[in-house]
Amino acid sequence: MSNVEKILSDPVGETATLAPKPKITAEGAGIRFGSIVAVEDFTTVIREREFVSIIGPSGCGKSTLLYAIAGFLKTTSGVLKVDGKPIVKPGPDRGIVFQEFVLFPWRTVLRNITLGPEIAGLPRAEAEERARKWIRLTGLGGFENAYPATLSGGMKQRVAIARALTCEPDILLLDEPFGALDVQTKNYVMKDLQDLWIAASKTILMVTHSVQEATLMADRVLILGARPSRIVADVRIDLPHPRDPLDQRLGRYRQEVTEILSAEVDRAMKGERGQ
Amino acid sequence: MTLDTAEIPRRRLPLPPMKLIRPVVSLGVLFGLWEIAARTGAISAFLFPPPSAIFAALWISAGPNGDPPYGILLDIALSLYRLLAGVGLALVLGTIIGLAIGLTGWGRAVFKPIISALMPIPTLAWTPVLLLVFGIDNRTTITVVFIAASFEIIYNVVTGIEMMTRKVYWVAASMGASRLQTLRYVVLPGILPYLITGLKLGVGYAWRALIAAEMLAASSHGLGFMIYDAQEYMDMKSIYGGILTISVMGLLIERGVIGALEKRTIEKWGVNVER
Ligand SMILES: Nc1ncnc2c1ncn2[C@@H]1O[C@H](COP(=O)(O)OP(=O)(O)OP(=O)(O)O)[C@@H](O)[C@H]1O
Ligand SMILES: [Mg+2]
Image (cartoon, rainbow over all chains, first blue to last red; front, side, top):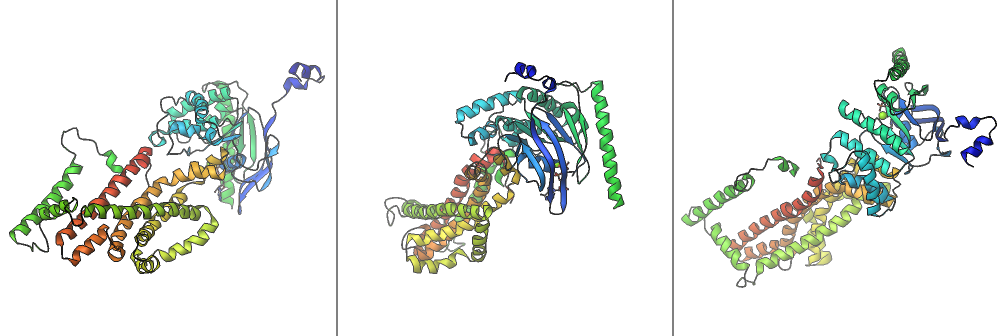
């Protein structure tokens, strides 16, 4: 059914505001390690091509949540679904970029990036063809034959992103991707990531500590509370992409998120002292 | 490890580097003093024949007029053959056992206690047993080499696996890698630096054990047997010639062969093995 037909057959006009399909669904998802509850009652819907940022105090279970969506860890309660199906194991439909990059030191930049297609059984030439696109878009051209040990933090970051994107995942999971970068490099890579997101049209879930990063890049910012964490606020950043960091309206969003976050940290600290 | 040599800046002088000059000078002085002492009668020329005479004897035994002709070359060839066969066996079986211990519960349960029990036994203590099993045969010395080289290889392979973070496996899993692909693309290259370290140490032990075992168990030829045989005839020049050859061959294997292997892998990758 074409869009026109849909609109014609939809007297109430719902299609005018038709949202993209849900990509990641969390229904009361919880993860515990023995007696430690890392994530509790996490419920949300992340739609196709949405850029969602997760922010929260240290140790509130952000990485754990990301690992569960990647399929590395199992939920101990509730469900996490991708495309309506419960997540049972990791797969190439979900690419992940770790804070520590986790590159393979014995492979060159190019070989790190082609590993995904190689594992998928693509011939080398084809794998390289695919990698070239992301090498260009991440600005890694000329570094194809370098070994990771010789790269700066910013370059390693780009390799990790290019490696994840070359697997052509629907969902990109980023765990504090700018943590290891200096401010200058960070600004560059952040700009790049926004462009990439626009070019690649992926669903992106990014964990961060930084209100500035979250508000600049994401459509929605999920604020997690202190452990055991649940979503304390879901802030929609209603500004077009790419965004200008100096935009006045962005400043207001930053303030809003900061206030909620500091109230949460205060509450957590008081709670700890009260114990 | 040996990686720090790469950081010494190259001198642009047309002289050979200090690294080469120093050992030549120090050994030259030693041999020079020895020569003078032996020639002047300060030390017994029978027990300590002058180096020039030792080299001359070596030279003759490497030619058609040796007794037997080309004797020393035969001894070298046979010792190297035993070393290569034993180390090759240790490399294959040691890696497999190391992988089993590092990656599987049953492997740990089966092999760990056995290895702990065998580890304190000096390799040569096996020679009487092997002599009864195989007789005076290459298999006896090859097995001694195998035992001497195995432990370091197994130990280092296990260490290599333990040093790998779970995130390395996660990256492979999120690319959809099967167990076999994970072994091939992640585990094997990941442990290679450790395997090389184990090989280096193992070959060192094996070379020493081989020479000793050849004295006890070889029916003919091999550097150890050559020395043993020369002692029967009180042929001091051949004894020293044999010792010298053992030293030079050991150095060549460790520096030349394993050094080249390190250059092509860990040094190229910029990986450092902590030990
Ligand atoms: N494998 C594990 N075993 C036991 N506890 C764990 C494990 N992994 C995480 N935790 C605990 O779960 C909680 C959440 O950890 P997690 O790493 O997800 O936090 P985070 O929000 O990512 O923190 P940060 O912002 O510091 O990275 C922490 O209290 C941590 O100690
Ligand atoms: Mg984290």
